[in-house]
Length: 102
Image 1 (cartoon, rainbow, N blue to C red):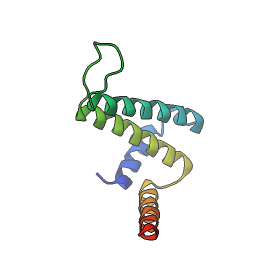
Image 2: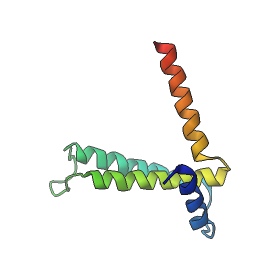
Image 3: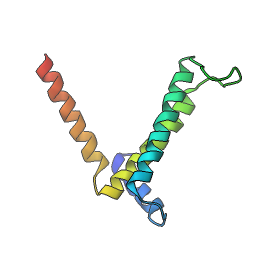
Image 4: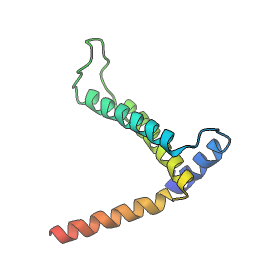
């Protein structure tokens, strides 16, 4: 699935939702990024929680990445920006930085 169709699907799915405040979405995004960090830490075998904390997996990382991506798409829809354009822009920016450092 491409970013454009993903963003369109997210827009269609969430258009009837009552909560569209950017501040709330940013708080949710922060929460999901924290859950992604936990999944990555656990996948690397760093289990700092209680002894019963489960081991990490690529599936849990993929799930958390999906949650982050979903919220980024919601923010993109709410602000009228395009995820595909943002992805292309950041790749161009990084390529320019890499070319300057060579």
